[in-house]
Image 1 (cartoon, rainbow, N blue to C red):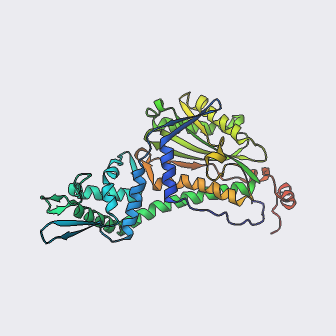
Image 2: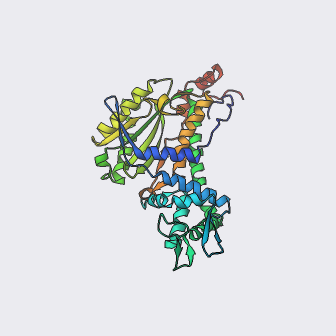
Image 3: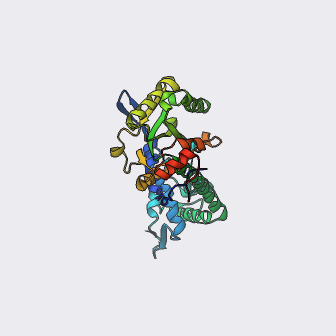
Length: 378
């Protein structure tokens, strides 16, 4: 049994908004960073299109409001006046929206619904950039009227039981993963009075990224984790979390969160550098890249949940859980097709009784109980 400890307040969790998720996704897909000999090297590639975020927002708005994008009024002389409503702006952005599609990814349910409706209507929307007043002889309708039909199709499908079930399933998967990681982090804090949290991003050089197979990349992570049994660098590591992702230009890469007994190790930036170097030189055979997120944690991140985190620092623990929440929520917004049937998120084993006995007790009663192998009176 774990030694009984004083009940601590529930760690608050502020859910990451869709806007924040997309901002981070755009940054992650665009920035290819590595740390080499103490220098941060950044390569800027092509991000996932910002239009994807706009499409998601548009579908959400359209699903909530029944207004058309355009109204058409026939004048006495036979001319048709086009009156633009609030949703007309989406019609004018349609060329950008259509250019954002990639068959390489599965997007959020809203975005996938958008493209599903585009496919169902075919060319009924007219060519990108059309004037909403343009008349199509083959359909007997204006381009703006086709767009109104497009919005109605989005509304009908988004309100269907099948769509809602699809959205709910992805949210439940994300929530289940988050709760599993939260339980894991909480269990580690039950054992250790403070954790040194290291965040590194590891992947492959731009020239090698495209040629790396999924099997090879998974083998590298397995080797990295297996070697912790014999490598002094891992001596005080008490836990880890990994997330496998694929960027269209970055290729396959991992976000790693390495957790150490904070009573035994400090200097998070130093350790993060060493792990990056270990990945590049020993694991990825010189083809790898490693970015030290701890090196500039206070300037680079809006809220810092990495570095040394004490068990009773509830604000910092909440920020740490927000960062972990991003890793569990990302697949609600973007999934690589080649990763659909493989495991993309993992963590270490829950702490054992032996680990509990090694942890530093937080009070004299717990210390005595730990030495005697009993639980203090509740």
